[in-house]
Image (tube, rainbow over all chains, first blue to last red; front, side, top):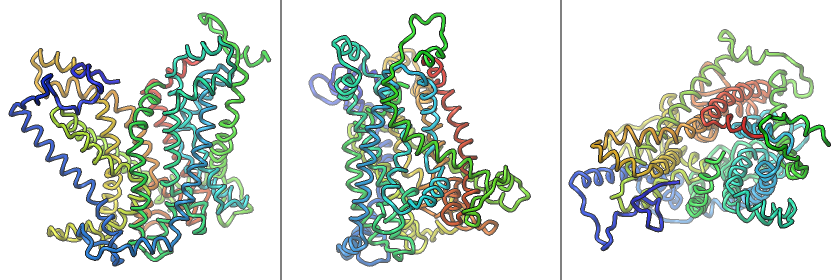
Length: 303
Length: 322
């Protein structure tokens, strides 16, 4: 999507962060004005990075600080210990992680399956209702399903489906319009010539779907899987509505319980839980970021 | 067989009428069922409850009350209007402020980072993305501790540089500032990445041509960079505003909606409409009022989505679908 004629010959034409290197490998000398701009930019960026990162360091420090007076303002804990982690595990942390993992994996797999099939129909097939279906998807993606929280809670209560991980998964499966819209946009970028060629060779609809389209939309499958999977670790409102006993808590509900009355403000164990859950999710995000960015760009720009 | 096909309007210039792929309905079945049962039915039920007096007192026997819930919420002389109107106003302020700060800070950083002489720019980008990458539920709850007026580290830090303790979560104004601050902290990196992508997609030819014509950097920024960025970012600003308008986590997990208002028991000073609907449902079992608020949120969000579709041309693209 980027047109960067200066670096057109390099392997990463869009990466403007590559230093300007001349053919002989020497760095270009900066003009005085450029140097001032560069260094003042750096100072501003450093300051913002510090402001953005220090709160996270505070939490990491607090997780190793055994005194429950939540925090000290020093970044190096006075008495380093794993006491908070031990306390956290006694509260059922792994249970919450497992529940989030379980819910996230199931919801993500089902979502990817439903999304792929529906998006295939919208992208590749002609049927009555296609136009209105697409408009419906566009509109639905603006309505998070928690807006219907009173209705969902009242309905589940009437059916006796409160405090059940299965009900929770069902509710989490509700918001699939956005996924389908993304996937449909991504599928539209796969050249139609491929399907036509396969059709001429005698491939049926199912074969075209599984053999031609599926392998080419793997990046978007990964994006949608990750969105839904990490979503289960980042969900509070529906979890807290439906799940009511600690054994059924997901991560968000459990961590919230740690700092609200129920477990008497256990800030130290909370910090430990935030670190244990946050670090893998941040790493997962970092590793998949290129995937997500490229998938979102190509999925979103092609309406 | 022929009925559905014949209802497709036959347009003069269409070269051939495509046959209907009946297998499409097979592919769509799982999505149709899940969306109908899990998205549309709850929405329809919400609309239904919004016109009844369904609450804890009328759990088994409830009746239609027409627009009574809406009248109660909107009529300024009704005590319940102190629930809705100030909350709506604050929700608008919150969403506008967060979207604006996210955008301005993100754009500013993107301009700084998009410097060909800054070799380590990608390191900065990665560091700046961390606050966005931490799942919101975890980071917002952590901020609740960091901002604790008595033992939170932010006040300790301020104390060490000689600033008196700030009542972050207990004073209405400071609580509102805190809610906006935390939402910006976790949201600006997204706008930064989007703006950076936009900046990098501007052809360098334009700048070279402008430089040859004698344009200085300020002219280049206002005449080339800003228009291009604006084109890319407006379609993102509207969904961002809509997202913050519906923001629940950023408010409820930080302040619980508090501090409490003296005029109204149901909502606090930082409650947005989304958190108000949640509290009315779970804490007060007032499903009718919660649903009425949700219906009004639906309507407001629908207006945004129509504006958005108009702007991005999604409606036009939709008209061309056959």
